[in-house]
Amino acid sequence: VSDRLIYSAENEDFQDQVKFVRMHLQLSQEELARQQEERERQQQLERQQQELEAQRMAAQRATAIAEHSENIRFTIGSANILRDEAEKIERMAQWLIENEDYSVVIIGYADRETGTSAGNLRLSERRAEAVTRALVEVGVAQERITTSFVGDTEQPFDNPADNRVVICTLE
Image (tube, rainbow, N blue to C red):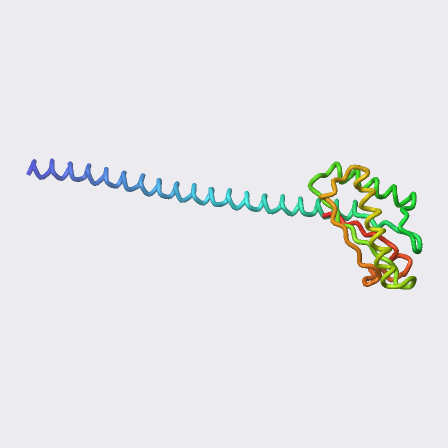
């Protein structure tokens, strides 16, 4: 009988130890699961922060483009840059020099109400080249400027006089 009592007591101690180990194992697994959930929450938060930062940067870039792009106006039949327009070019050039990760696309136009199509094509080319030259003279690297011209084949504005223009768009 005493051997059975000893065996029974040892068995109960062992069973208690097994219960104790199982309980700690379960707690450890629950803690690991909580830690994994916390890591996943942190990663999701980091992804959301990165997305917000990318959106902020895109909005900032779009604002800069809108604020510093320019329309350079010309008088009828001329590719000479007027004083007020030269000031716009200088401001845009200075901004481009300070913000080297931007470039500029220049497109020359002419209004179709005056001149011939061939003459307007040449005129829009001279206008675009004049603005390009002015930017380069102020210090904007030529490789940051893309220049094209369309003559009177496209009219970006309803008013014919407004189409005597070089549109400078940052990108």
